[in-house]
Length: 224
Length: 234
Image 1 (cartoon, rainbow over the protein chains, first blue to last red):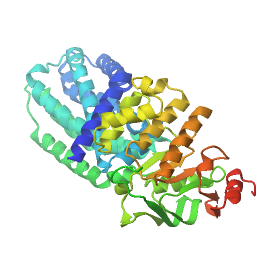
Image 2: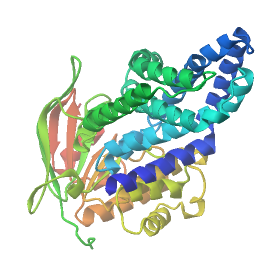
Image 3: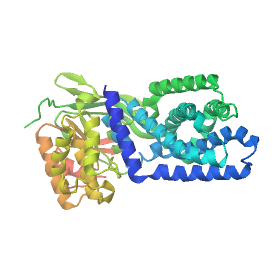
């Protein structure tokens, strides 16, 4: 019960501080918009090729957005050493991770949902018929990215060369999630949309395994 | 007068060592801080004061040795010890108001009636008029007052203070010294790092000087206590 109530309190804090400063969301939305527009110039949006590449480009853009969004996750807790205050206040440090990854997943999903219509228009790919299934992939993929990213953000925030360290650690770790998410998305954006269930199963397994690892190791990741 | 459920708590450091790579921050430090004692830690920058306080707060794991909290009933865990920690950094969020900060930490600590507790402390630290202002609009001294209020939320039995007067103006130092005096006189255990003499150091009943991670002096006698705090014999 304490885990749930403390997570809710911390998630409320994350949302409040972000919507008050709009630091992460504004930067990420603008950045991802530029990436998607630049990609759209590279491909002819009327060709079938565009439809084939769209899924990969979409996840590549989301990956850039995620690495930008995850970097400050623990870094901004260091400005006033608020992470120490949180560690002193909660009985289970896993609470801090759950709240952070819930906030990261929400922000990432919000960015993705804002970007989908722009993407659909620029790449001439209809998303309405597969919207529900697309949201499922986005959720599972973003959750995987957030779990791994939140854990690595905690590690890199305490290291030297932290700005460089997070992408270096994150990109190889996220490759399986990106491959699975891209495969499922490519299937959904096909002229004859289909669901790649094996990809969905893989995403669920990845999320469960990494969430469990975070639960077991979280305390050590926060130590100075 | 003490709060209900209050139990004086002592701290025992046994052979504490902390290494950062090849650098020793603390070397085999063994200390016992009795319940209700007010101890001043003195020493030059890098002598290990902050590390010792952070180890006591369980924010840093020692490379060797143990820290135990105990009350009349034997050893107690960190939660039962009810610690209040004031660090050099304020440990509060700039993007939240003073009241939101206190409410956040009060709720996380499971304090009953968090709003009432936050209001009481905001009044006590003299920020009730600015309760709705974002902390980032505060001066350093005002931020330190919020930090002190945060540390007192759980009515701590043990106070760990790392240069707690940072940023406070003379009136602020006088107010904080008075608050500490009240806490000391009601049986709270206080371990604080200080530089030089002040109204706050005058409250100490014992002084310990650290140098290069070693305990170099430890006294309860008035004259020696003063010399340790002012480095008179250094």
